[in-house]
Structure formats: C-alpha cells, structure tokens
Image (cartoon, rainbow, N blue to C red):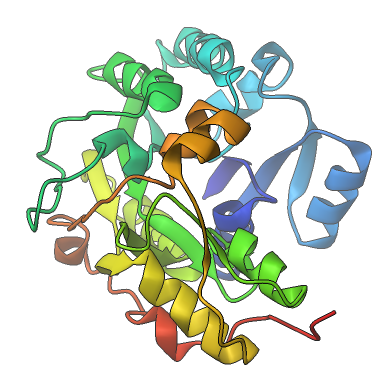
Length: 295
C-alpha cells in the first residue's frame, strides 16, 4: 500500500513511519526542511518537501495515495487557518476519486474536554474541546460524508514514551535534578497510551477499511498526575514533591493551549479492541525512563 504521511518526525508519526515500513508499506512523508527530508530518507521514507500551511504544493501526492495518515499539528493558533485550507485542498483533489482515499485523521483526547467523576468519555461522547483545539472539532465535522474519502478519526490519549512525549516536561526537569512540574493539581487524571501502541492503532485501521468514524486509542483510562510524578521521581532518586504550577499561572505563562494538560479526563475505547488492537504497554510505571545523568 502507498501511504502519504504528515507529522512523520513527531512522537506518534515517527512510530507510525517505522511500523508502516516494517509492515511492507511504501511511505511518502511530508518534510518541511531539507534536513528533515534527509532524516526521513534515512528512515526509509520518500520525502516530499512542503508545509502544511501551503498544501497546494503537495496535496496531489496525498490525494493519489492509497491512504493518507494526517498527524501534523503546529499546536498553536495558526492551526485555525491552516487546517481548513489543507482539508479544502484535499476535498478538491479527492472529490472525483473512483476508489475513496483511506483517510486517517488525528483528533485527540482534548476534544472531549474534562470528564465528570468516574464516567469516562467514549466514541459516542459529544465533543467539548478546549478553546485552542476547537478548529479540530470543526475539521472533523467537515469530514462527514465527504465524497472521495473513507475516513476514520483517531483520538489518542496522552501519548508518552520512555524518552518523553507528554512526560517530556517532567523528564527534562528531572534530568536537571529539579522536581517534575505539574500544571494545575496533582489530582488531575490523564488517560495514557504509549506511542508504539498509538502507532499500532493506525495500522489496525489501515487493515480494517470498513471501520470509519471516531476511534479512541487508550491503554490506561485514568492516571493521576501525582502518580506519574512520583514514579518518575523514584526512578530519578529524587525525594522531593513535584513542583505544582497553579492553573491561573500556567494559563498566564503558556496561553490557552495550557488548558489541555490541565484537563482531568478518563477515556475508554469501545471500538479499537473489536478490531483486534491490544496495547502492549498497559502500565506506564513498569517502564524505565530516560532520565540520564542528572546535572
């Protein structure tokens, strides 16, 4: 299968690239710079220079592939204009395809907002995005019943790995001998999934083209931030408490996107297990993290 991939150097994207190539697929990957293109070529992909903000230069490569996996996100306010332009270009190119393009679109857990009590969000839960992520909910709505596309939307939980992912801020602090920072409160809960398991979900949906609509990708439905920090502190040999940044301070310093890490959520997938997806990493605390030599 010929796959077009955006976000191929990101946390999930690099794992998707590795796994799709290992499965025997051919991957064309969008590269923003020459150095990124060289990196992708070394990793086995065919790089295409381009920018998600200017899709017209590369969208035909995506629209004529067998599948398009869209993972790129700048995580800033520019996405409000970038994503509608990208999707409009894709719609124009695919509207008359005789065989619909398999389109795997990436949403995310922040689209569900804070969950209440012990009741987790599922694929049937209404979207209630944080303000900075509202554009993604609008994009998902625009994908419904779109001619020329066969679309599945993946909503990964908070994606981590032993070198970072959503744990990056904590690991960076611990490598410097400082307490792990927490925005908001230690009691906030995150749903978790390891990046390799998240990537495997994309391959599962490539292999199940009849599976459309939303799919939550989660291994641990809810884990307290205080528990995550305590686990990492123990591995770092640090006995201090985490450094808690109050919500108002986090928002003042980091803007509206800071709402995401401060959501208290629980997620459950009702669809991925039925497709045969099983996460290999079901307890983040059993892994050894790359804390390295503390300064």
